[in-house]
Length: 185
Image 1 (cartoon, one colour):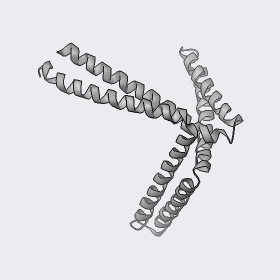
Image 2: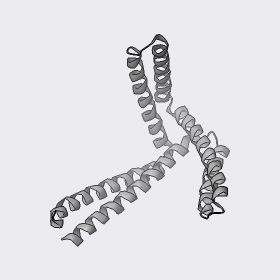
Image 3: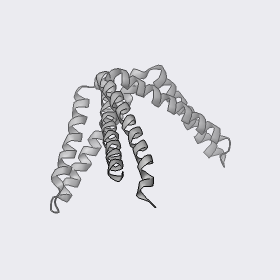
């Protein structure tokens, strides 16, 4: 295949990827600027997804192979709908619940990373794992000490940071694709 055949598609894809990256950076900055509002939005979105998932579970209860399986699918579907409805109706409490899950995750991730750092010590590279574990424990501790207020800002802030980093990554990838295209032509 001729290399010049790739130049147009690479350039078009690079521009689109870079534009999507700029959009994500803007969205991430908005989430960081208003973490409480973005946390509430995330809580509502998770609630809607729980409701939809609950409806799917209930619909599959009718085709379950046995009565016990059908009952469990139906019960979990109803539970998901109730939990999702609660998160949509009370998004501030939903974001607090999501923050609790995040706290548990950060503590578990931090402890796991510390244990892995001890195992990697003889081989090398354990310092980076130690740093990662300490960072996770620090984030979990900050959220814990500021609870319940952390439930109002933590979700939005963390989502914002993630969107910002993903956007910057896409901008870099798009720029690389465009530069690669310039090399090809």
